[in-house]
Amino acid sequence: MEKQLSFVLKLSLEEMALRRVVVNLWNEADVLATIKDSRMKELADDAYREPLQIRQYKKCKDWRVTVENKVKAKVSKLVLPESLKKWMMHTVTPIGLQIQEWEMIMDEHLRDSREDLDIRFLEQLCWTYAGKIDFQKTVEKLVSIEMLDPGKRYRLACLYCLEDSISVLCEELPEDYKTCFRDEPYVMPAFEVQMEFYWADVLKGEESKLDRILTRSNPCTTFHQYAFERSAYRSNRALTEYFFQKLTCEERDSSLINSACNVVEILCKKSSFGVSFDFPTENPCGVLCYLLSMMTSEEQMQVFKKHPVGVLICLLDWPWQDIFLEIADFIWTVLPETKNIDLEDRKQLASSHWFPEFLKGFILEDNWNLVELGLREATLSEKDRQTMQFYTNWYITLTFEGEESRDKVRRLKRCFESLDETEASAPDIRSSEINHWQTLW
Image 1 (tube, rainbow, N blue to C red):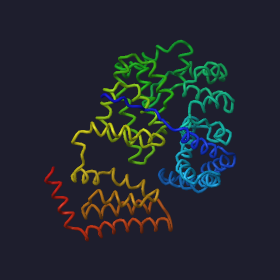
Image 2 (cartoon, one colour):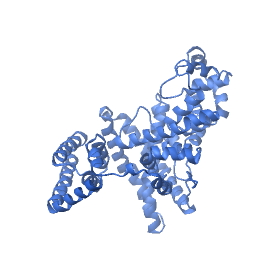
Image 3 (cartoon, rainbow, N blue to C red):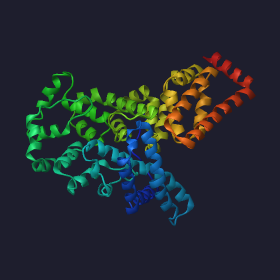
Image 4 (cartoon, helix red, strand yellow):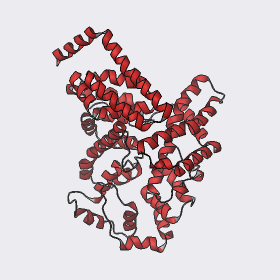
């Protein structure tokens, strides 16, 4: 591969400045207070007993009405050209979503302290030039200003490899906290590395024993290799970079490509099914770009050939769209002919469980033009179309209530009616198109 690909965002000074303005608007006191109120309402709401997807929808809807609209109102009042304000409006939502995702990550890391994530924490958020929350710098601030008890600060410092703080915080831990590191055996979990135990062993000079523990269940993998792969899987960039630097050349060759492919697969599943896994993903696209940047051109090629569509789906995550076109332009040149989609491929995709899940996301956001486009491109048979309409109607009645439910059912019905009208007006064209593709394939 002759062309050297870049996985670093390159924004103009104007873009960086406009994103910074939007970030500052999100950080204004009245907006942070509204976020806090919204969170307290969520914690007290009995709707927490509802299915996860419904809760997520209601939370996003409430967020848009109460918080996001407040920021957009601030943008509209800025003394700037309308073209710039219009551009800024498009960044309000993705920048705000960073705050929601950050809260989810902190909830996961501090499971027993949800009440602690108040406005003081929101005021500590650090941001990159691209409008992303800088998790590591944010945690550095939280740890340094002593807003949490020593145990929670130690936990966060371990999770983000704050080496200069860990040894100091370890000395501040209560004795009963330290005792668990001495007395409890290290258990190698399936999906994560217990960083509190890891750093306790590092400070005692006993890091080598972790290889012996891992060898009992996985004799072909070193601890550093295992920790690197798990950190990438969980999309923790700080841990991924830390453990990657500890790998030998042989371990890097063995783990780098597989780890990148795992990140692509987990992100694509999350995007396609709209489900929540047993952990929140912090920065999957950032981790993927880091892994790709550590590869040779030949290694990058292997990832692109194995997951061409998956890589591009990952790069649609904000703000990585800025490098999407360059990577897409290259991947297009290496796509095998078998990746071309014919009518049989469409039928197979439309009949799988992926397709209705794919439509759900558009229905949640009221993107009915995309719902209709997806149904049209699927070229469903009459029987499959009836089944699909029944399934999506059932989903709507389970997810929504009252007039909102009735409105979505009406709009869905109109999508299917539009397909029927199109077919009725052009049966000969459809027949000739099918014959054409069948001849080619």
